[in-house]
Amino acid sequence: MTLQAIGRPFVFDLLHNVVCASTGRCTCKQRELPRRVLDGSGRPTVRYETRLVPKSVTLLVGKPQDVQVAVVRIPRVQRAIARGRLASV
Image (cartoon, rainbow, N blue to C red; front, side, top):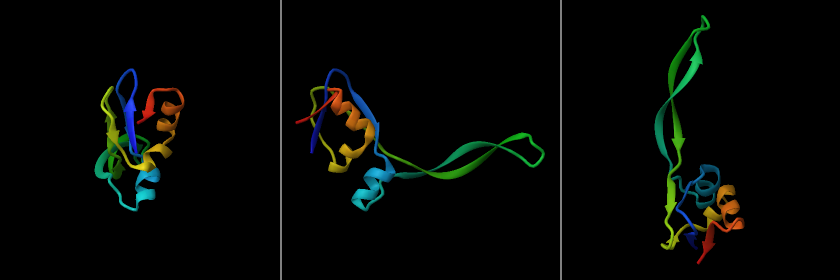
């Protein structure tokens, strides 16, 4: 499938539960991200946890780009198509 941004560039994340699940191949990266939590005495502290970080895609105006069919299932992409910000070419 080919999508093209209309009016201005469009950036979106490839959601793990939509794209990776439908293709059967995870393209996310594992990153150590900080998380603020309270320690045993109630004081704030930072702990790091490994999380999946999805890749993102940037669609430029006037530059059609091939994307996986699963991308159209991402809610933000569906809204952009419905509002005329993205076009299927």
